[in-house]
Length: 88
Image 1 (cartoon, rainbow, N blue to C red):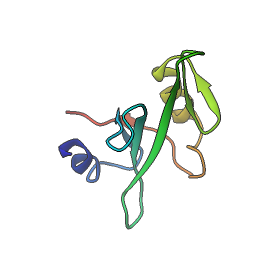
Image 2: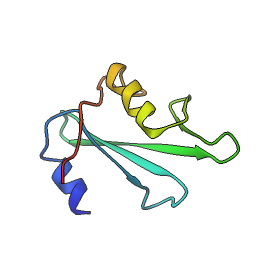
Image 3: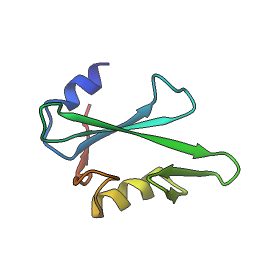
């Protein structure tokens, strides 16, 4: 995964949302952090009935709303916020 490798050398808070490799029905939010392992991954589920995305117990009707929320508040169980998407 070339983009995930590129994410590892980006500034902290840089993120990438992609389809999960291990679970095809989920999205994966990968975020660059300042640790020995520079990336943390969160699973983002989609509720087909409610037509919404779920991360950390919070529900969003648009993926952009999820990004906006976590750019203003820390991600679940980790003190970092989204700053900018990974550029191609």
